[in-house]
Image 1: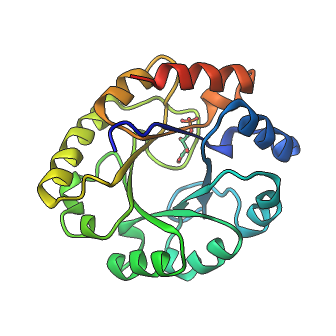
Image 2 (image 1 turned 90 degrees about the horizontal axis):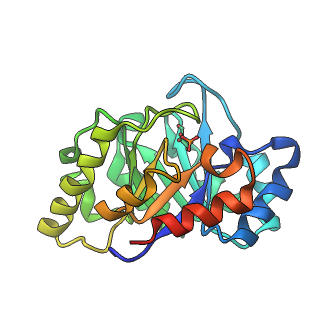
Length: 221
Ligand SMILES: O=C(CO)[C@H](O)[C@H](O)COP(=O)(O)O
């Protein structure tokens, strides 16, 4: 999966008064996935949006929707998110009691399942769940807010995760990274083996088309 490189703009930094229009601009400029940061004010100290917004934007684009659930008890809501049109769902293992059951539930409902590592969560917490997931999201900032600075040490986890993928025979898993990714660091991150690059501020602040063009150019290795 080393060669698969996908840009996933996070609408967290979009102008919500023009959300549909900005998603369309991102799609036409070459975005590969739309990243949805769902926050509940409990797992993280911020609240964003949920199913009603997702349902409204679903018909506006053909791009896959990737929901990063920063919520407690995600098992209560995954079916509703999938019904609203989400194609990929990632959750934090410390936000639920039965991670394996939840991964299986997401997949049985037809979506891809991912788990998320916070900056202080070690890669070895994936040792058992790795056999079941479709992707792993490595947070390169603490979850909760857009526009934060990339934490360089989080990049060391990509190598550790790739080792774990090798030893468990799960080299098909996609590695996603999220937080503080911009035109200046995306190439380095790409070279480490990341497949999906989430970018909020670096896409939606300024000219969306130009930003996407530059990020896509720079993520090539
Ligand atoms: O998950 C997130 C915050 O919890 C955001 O997706 C992430 O921080 C992207 O925003 P930016 O590119 O502005 O850092």
